[in-house]
Structure formats: structure tokens, C-alpha cells
Length: 393
Image 1: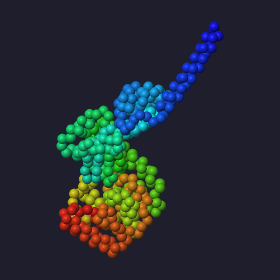
Image 2 (image 1 turned 90 degrees about the horizontal axis):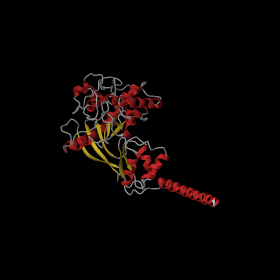
Image 3 (image 1 turned 120 degrees about the horizontal axis):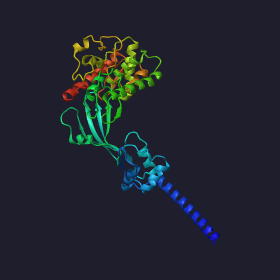
Image 4 (image 1 turned 30 degrees about the horizontal axis):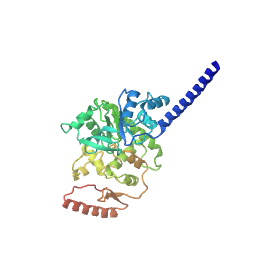
């Protein structure tokens, strides 16, 4: 009898063992196979949220087939305590494994709303935008100028959201004074800024920040980013440049940045100014003269006067030889690369071509012909009431 009981118990044990193994195999398969989600969704992980709460939310929204299996899989992968605050895009058919990776990887949120404080060359604006899960593209909710009056209701409400993301974006060519002045208008930042950072020392880029972040700490991040970039690019510079220091290269990069906004032209523009330096010619570039007039404190808002072109200032490259004493803006990576590795050309002149770009010339005679074409374009635009744009160097 006892032998029969033992035999039956052993049989039952093996059956249960096989069933358990089958259950584990099924669970593993459920964890890695495509999930039930038909359309992309945006999942929010709140600060301090538990895995149980997040898994129930995922099941209710159809992102996972079984919250228990999701939790077990997270425990098995040793990621149950790695939930990261933010909003995450879950794509159609994402497996539980992929969902877990999305909400535990950290870094920038991949969906939801964000406030982007953009500092441009002539103005700043604030954009509240939302990522549409269906298209994976941002949709603008509201846009306004900071400090221009009462803020839109949508923005005021967004500031109260615990899941809101914040970003500060610097355009290439902004001056350090502009950055400081505009950051004072960012109402989600805190703290005062002391002295204006050295011109050219801030890296134009997009910076993720937390609500209440310190302005001075953000400036330090921008400075560190530019320093890191220069350290990376300087060793790979061309061997025959007419300047010997990082600061001089940064000055050249800032001039290139202000002369053209077209990426494909930057190395060619840099070659023009380098050719002039090598031949002992003056740079004769308007942006440096403008910086001498404004001190980098905003746009000039008009054309240069002849008296300003003749006035002796450290930045008037129609009067001085060589480079001005400092950068005239904060150049981006592409302009720094152009200053360090310019195109090899024989160009000495360039003028606007009417399309937003420039046409280049090797001789003054050729340049004068190009200028005449540009003046005709300007005259035609003036007759049509269009604003002037571009110029020659």
C-alpha cells in the first residue's frame, strides 16, 4: 500500500513538475512575443510608482496581456525596481520585454508634453508641444514670446503637470548676452546669473532641464559642452591654418556662423576668410562690424551706416588687420568644424545669390559682376515691397 502511495505521489510530482515547466515556458513565451496593443499609446510612469500599479495600468490599456506575467518577468530580469519617471511611447505589438525596456531604460521621455524654451538669434519663444503616439511627431499646442504679457492658459496649466518635461534650446549664432537675458524670462528656472559668459563659450544645443533648475548650473552645462566639443575637434584640425589657438579658431567659427545659415556653405565661407588672412587681406565682414556697434546686445535692426563701416573699433574688420579680439557669437559644431577644416579653394569674395545662399568668386572683377546681379535682385524685391536680405563680403 505504501509503495502504491509513494508511486502515485512520485507520478503526481512529475506531472506537477512538467506542468510547472510548461507554465514557465508559456510565461516566457508570453513575455517575449508580440503583445496585444493595436495602436501606439503614451504611458506615464509617475514618480515613486510601484511595479504593481504600472503593470495594472499597462494591462487596462491593452499594452500587456497579463499584469502578473509582466511583474514576474520584471522580477526575473531584475528590473522590478528600475522604473523611471516619465512618459514613454509604447508601439503597436510591443512585447512585454520591450515594454519593460521602455519604462526602465531612463533618459529622455519619448512621448507626452514638453515645454521648449527656444533662444533664437533675433528673438525667443516658448513652445508647449505634445508627441502624437500615432505619428510619433510633435504637435504644437501653444507658442508665445516670453515676457510679452499674460501667458496662455494652456501653458499655465502645463506648468502644474508633474510629468511635464522642460527643454532649453540655443540656436547657433546667439550671443552670450542674449542667452543670459532670455534665461531670465524662463519661469520654470530659478536663481540669478552673475557675469555674462565669455562670447563663444556656450554650446548651441538642446538641453533637458528639471523644473526649478538653477540658471547658473545650466550656463555651466553649456560652457562645459562647448569646451568638450573644442577639445574633441581641435586635434583633428587642418595642419596649415593661419591661426594657432583654439580661441582664434572659435573667433573664425563665429564669423562663419553669422555669415551663413546654410550648412553646405560653411566650409567654403571659412575658406574665403582663411584665404584673405593668408594673403594679408582684411576680412571685411559686416557681422563683426555689427558686433562692434551692438556689443552683442541684440540685433542691430537696420543696415550698417557708412560712418560705422569707417569707424575704428576692435571689431571693424574693414579697418583692422586679422581677426577681431573675441568671437562675435556662440558658434555651433558645424561652424567650428568648418573653421578647423575649411574647404580648399581660391575664393576671396562672396555675395548673396537671391536664394538664401551665396555665390563665390576668385577675383574682384568676377565678384563685382556677381554684386551687380545681386543688386538687380534687391531692386526687384524692393519694387515688390520685399525686405532686403543678405549682402556681400
